Length: 148
Image (cartoon, rainbow, N blue to C red; front, side, top):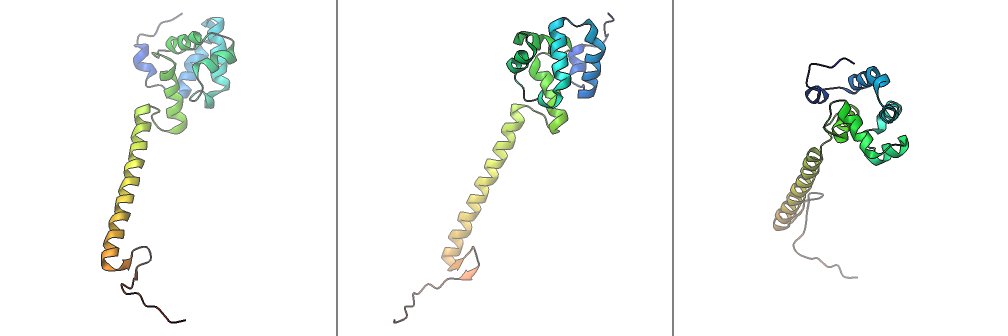
């Protein structure tokens, strides 16, 4: 078996799904039985790998969850979640990190708060001016009652 001269950790982080699948195909015959099972699963379920849990993949392959982690490490990843990130990037076009998700949620919350503050500000201003800000009609400040 020929060893790469590059650091596998460094190259794994920059792989695309197709490049990873090519590396798996090239190494397949040399893999132990358990890792072959994981390789076959990943090939057949590419679009699900980004969401599958290690235990679910292990159950489907009939192996221990540590075999799934060893599989990822075999191809230069520090763990299975790093391998999953390659699939997340490819299929969603985004970095799959929790930090990125948290930032998107915070942005939505901030935008919602800003919108609510703006609505309250407009309502207060309109009330002072005697205008209904939602449909920009002048609101009468005196009540007129018509006799029945």
